[in-house]
Length: 175
Image 1 (tube, rainbow, N blue to C red):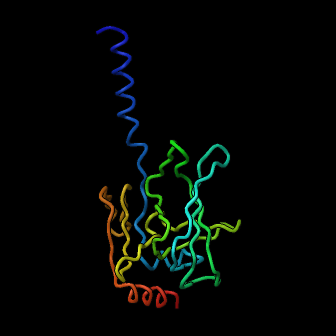
Image 2: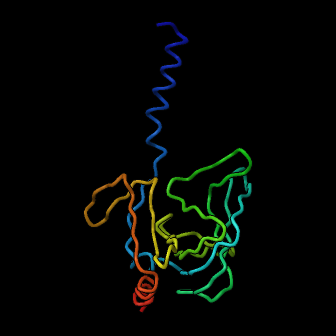
Image 3: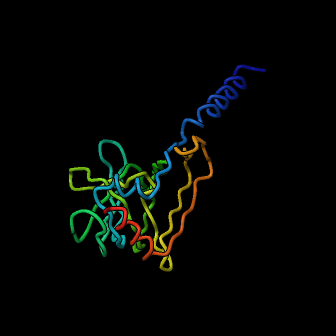
């Protein structure tokens, strides 16, 4: 085998071995933990999604018009900020980071960043899409550690609950 071929296969081997390092592992959060950890919980409609360069990194800002403030200060809008996004042909993808689209209806569990913006608690676990009067969580692209069993799952999970029952449960857990 010549040097050039050896060098190419060595690079592929290093790349293959490095790939698992790109995975994100998160601890599964039950609804009680999401509620307790959150400074604010809102139901609303995504108004805008905008990616910006900051300090040589892409950050995405998501503006949500609040329809129902379930926990925290009453406000008309909340501004989320998280790493990753797309500007032109450049995309930075953070596994497990929630994705937002303009006009979608959501319930989000938020932590105040003290700079006027919020983080979503538990990465994509803290975002529930509202679809046909159901709150739907779809967590994928991450490894999930179940703290009850100590087992790891590579599949993620999906949860679905009637919207009003879900909101009632959130309010009950805040008491």
